Image (cartoon, rainbow, N blue to C red):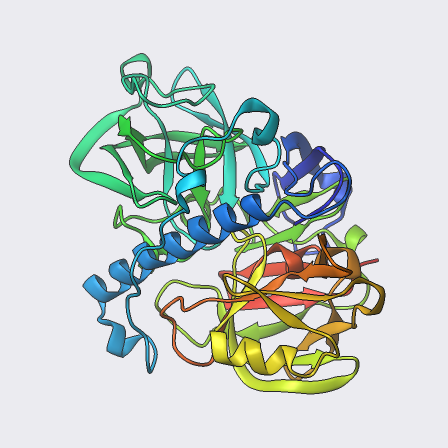
Amino acid sequence: MFCKASLLTVALALIASATPVTRDTGIRIPVHKRSVKNADGTVNRDAVIRDKVRMHNKHVRNLKTIDSKIGLENYHVGAHIPKLAVLPEHLRKRQSESLTDQDEEEWTGTVDIGTPSQSFVIDFDTGSSDLWVASSSCSSCEASATYDPSASSTSEEQSGTFEIEYGDGSTASGPIYTDDVSVAGISVTGQYLSAVDSESGDLVGDVADGLMGMGWPALSQLDADPFFWTAIDQGAVSQGVFGFYLADSGSELYLGGTDSYYYTGDIEYYDLVSSAGYWQIGGASAIVNGETVVSDIETIIDSGTTLMYGPPSAVEDFYSNIDGAQSIGDGAYGIPCDSFPTIAFTWGGNTFTISSDAFNLGSVGDGLCQAALGGDDLGFGDNVWLLGDTLLQSVYTAFSVDDSAVGFANLS
């Protein structure tokens, strides 16, 4: 998600009709995005490392949830729970203000909670399934807005606690509530959420006050339906589909359908291959300069991950097909800046090309530029890759709860 714009837009449909949905039915709210590129266009490798650690530990937490609910052996062959990743010593303290704008990237919009409503800037994440915000009783939280359950007449405290593991292995936790939640006029009642009242270590995102998970209920640590599932159950949307368009400007999340303004042709859908909670589809192949170099892989589509990751050995094989590619450490690879290849993915139908601006993260020196695919043992199994915003900003992506499928279309 390495775009140059710092102010984007997210759109959420109030009502999705049975006819093709157009952008005129949506409502737009401003979102803020941060870049991990330096001002001179080179890659900020510290920011990339922080993003990787955050991503890794999020999915360690997810795998623990899967294991407790269904057992990893019932999720995927070879699945295991890796050790938590730890930030290098020089990154374990929060960065100075001058570096904050080069930290992990997020796509955020406004969410209202409670009666009367309290507004928050929230990160939308298809790789997790819970809604959480900082609590007004949290003295260590550094959010710009905090949730005060006592100020909401519709707030009800529930039993149990919620815990988050952060990028440096520290944790945040808080009580569980239900309350009214609204996103651009799509309103639900009795939505489960957590109000984090203690946290330490490296905080997740400076801009966002919290996170709205848009993965399947099976990943929920709250053991409750995520917001979009609640919206479907309560009839707040007429289609169980949401779409992402991520770009330099005009980006949107569309709830209740897809926005045909941003794509051409039909959306090509692929059935989910897992019931463990991920938006995970199979039959994928990775293509370099028109040649298939990796095939028959499964892919998790995660808007909360900035880059793309695969099993280290598979990623090594991928780069062995690119002239001049070499490891630059920590699972990352560099490619000669003047000869970046064309990268694409297919799931058995159309071929979807990764934007060159998205795949080339910027110079690391000596004529090399860092590529957006890295190797990491995420514990998913030997043939499961994690595709984040590098893919999502190259295609229009639709997530269908109704049909248990992920779909892609070429951008208009």
